[in-house]
Image 1 (cartoon, helix red, strand yellow):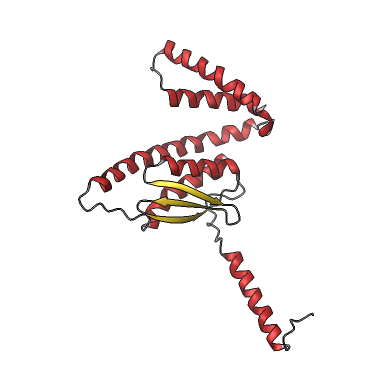
Image 2 (cartoon, one colour):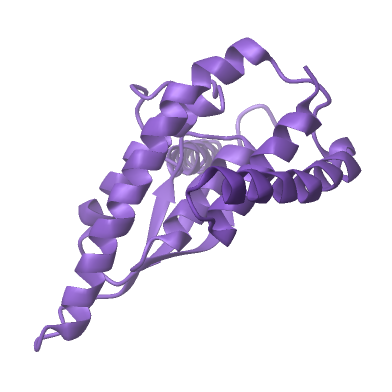
Length: 206
């Protein structure tokens, strides 16, 4: 099945969500038609920027994970609103801002963008940057000193994003260490320097 009509319908649904509509048959139908009138042409015009076909089986399999992702996100959205309100209104103002590096297991642009936007839409956190070499997001948080408090919901989102976007890793896979490769390079460099010192300043093989 072609991908652009699916994206057009998704844009129409987003239009309904953002614009707001009365939950009655006629207003809902009118808003849906307006959303399709906007979403379909946009999806068609930009169709060359994404794959032309979409696997229906994979799309259907991703629906449960998508629903759970949205429920988790909305739950965290409500919780974060209450938490930020408490921190701002409390006499002691327990605000400890910091920037946290969060390595990711997802690798596709769509999955990374989804998680980054979810972070920025949640009160108290903001995605500042993405490092493609380390596959990490840099997140500013008002409770940044408590790393686990910030990272825990993001890991939940990522677990379902791995399924939604059919990533290579699974939710049970460990989070990669972005410094692991640097440590290997450092050890190799140290071994080379040691060999050079042992051989009178020339590394082995030279």
